[in-house]
Image (tube, rainbow, N blue to C red; front, side, top):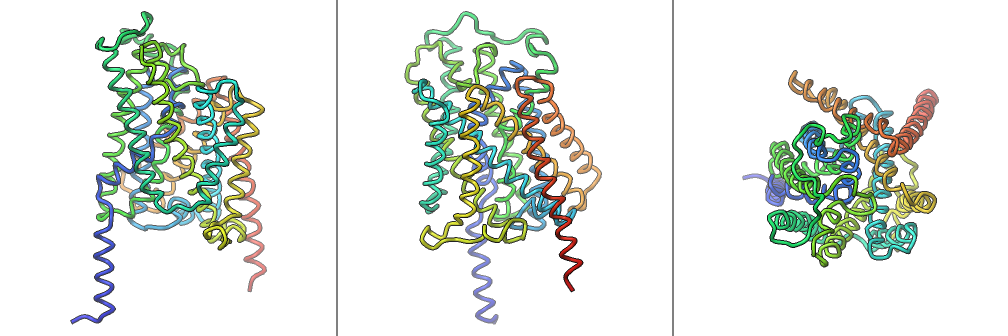
Length: 456
């Protein structure tokens, strides 16, 4: 007979295994977490640039996203760590890589929240066009902070419900669009593009416009790194790659069908960053309820995603502080506020305030600029995941080739933004943030060297 301790350990292990996620549960969770305002509104920027070829952009982005997930899942399965890809960067290249990767990711999440904040404000202006964008941005920012302050009990259940709402909104559009095309719904425009019959119609803006659209397709898949973090909760960790494949096949199927219907029903010249392309596509049909229901579903789901992102950013900074990659004050939690790390929340609130100020100064192009910058920083993170995997894992030739393809696709998404004048400022904004993070990292490297020399 084993000792009581051994029995308890075995029981605990069995319970943990029993409570683990099945591969298909992680796939569904991934689909729910990934679909957000970047798809519902951000995809319109890409469609406006390149027209029907945006469908191809989403297919290419799916391939690139899978490659990133493939390497992150393999590293997580081999060595589960709280710091995930930031930890693996440090393991591969040293403390400077962990520090730079963590702060770059923090900056990315802040920008993504700024993009979500602006998207929610634009969608709300659909009902209240006279109210300035920055007022809505401020209201949503305050509400998201209140949600975090209230604690996260039951938050997972709420997130699951809202994930269903997001997915249901897409299927509602697909069914209504199909009914409209068949002729079951009256209305529609005589100028409907229809199926393109030539290469010129598929790529109306040429290769340069198609190249520029890639980033917005990749941005719609943003969040896959979060699923990489959750793969350690699987019952069988070897199922992580299968979960990723099914998740991305499901997302790609949903994305390509819905985007295909949009470009079939409405000319890309009629799209605007101020309205969801899905609402624009059905605006000429007699569906008075659709814009309001669809808009409301996106706002509810988008606010949920933004609040979850805020919570993630706050806890990320706490982990960074514990690792010595951020000031120790960010580890402090106040008992009076449900043990929340208020210093970390305060810094995130300052980041959100910057988005509100930008919305006040640049109300016309703010969403395009912030979304572009956030998408590029996300590509930087994803590239580093692949590069870290080369050193952390025992990669085979096929993995080296696969990673090389991934790097090329991510680089293509980043450089494409330089080609288009209307979104170019977003590229320079991301460059400034990356240079700041790199500069601070270099300063910290010198400080760490001095500490090592002075210590016995």
